[in-house]
Image (cartoon, rainbow, N blue to C red; front, side, top):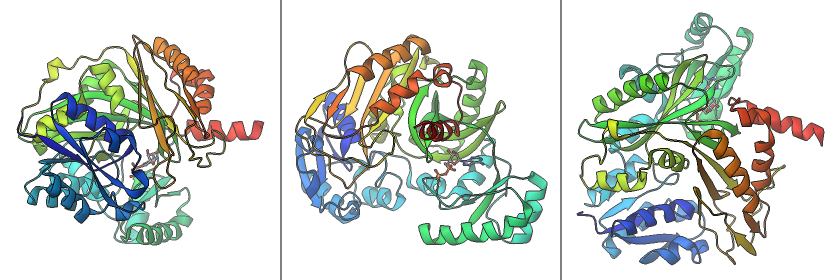
Length: 451
Ligand code: ADP
């Protein structure tokens, strides 16, 4: 290993996750942190820690000069960005590489291509991935939009090319509203992302969200590690993820997997990536590619037995992939619950001081969290405070174990979404794996009415 010291440009559970993989590989770690995170677990565990600015993320975890300085001062020879923050910022990736520091992530040009949704779709289409029917690129006029919508059939969805987090999207049911809604989408996109470009897709009524994990060595070798089903979402945010998907067959996985692997080989993709699809009536439709490690990667680790962060570090160090497609054997079932510091019914943020903490344990139970007794959860960052990942020999055993583990989990001092997950597990549709991306919002609305 040429890499001796990794600077972790992140915080919370993912910073710990990276630290753990690095230490198991004999690599030292450097934590960076804001003034609000002086007492954070990633700061305590890392070999060195450097303060990079005030609480606001834009002045600290997004502060590129401060992070690069921290890497130089500490003589880190690689940077891992985790997810969120600077992980999909190709300029940051370029700056890191220009400083002769290894970037534990994809090639900057691939981050750039996949970061623009119109370009990503065109690229995916050229690579042979199935697309949602829609405009071939950006919409250039209302006339073009009308003609296309007639061809595709209503309802259609207007989406922002620079969109993210589900923002800047408009569903159009009626041709009479097309012009108006297209204008609104474009204005909103300009305000939110500084880019008014919009494109059109057929609006799928009840799809599932199914995503494939991939790895490439950057030289034309690539593998897939099966899929995750992340259909249980609230406001386009994933709440509960599982692998494998209860909805697809082994043959569909193998076929789609082979198409994806071919695409990644052609692209000479490097590092970890996720290809996201909507899935409806037996068909996959590409929506986007994430060029980073995902929050929900542990469910894939549980069913494959591979350490995905270790693999990322190896690839950044120029090592070949440590497994071939034939080595990837999916066994059993895994589910992740995202636990947020929020009220389980109103979802009001509830950052507080941890006055009691007991993570669940036992066989096949994993808690990824940066919480500890006495820790004050700062109000400035993401509300996710823990991930509970449970494995079982099959889905039914996994659900039972998950229920048992949630029952053991104690986090005192703030509201958490643990009761939401417990309630979800009582539901027949969840038990049967019978849900799509609309399911959770509908269920939550029913719960509110019942109260
Ligand atoms: P973002 O980058 O803003 O998250 P995505 O393209 O990933 O945008 O879409 C976010 C979510 O919006 C999807 O997970 C899905 O719930 C919904 N969505 C996106 N495209 C469509 C579509 N064509 N039909 C129906 N729902 C869609």
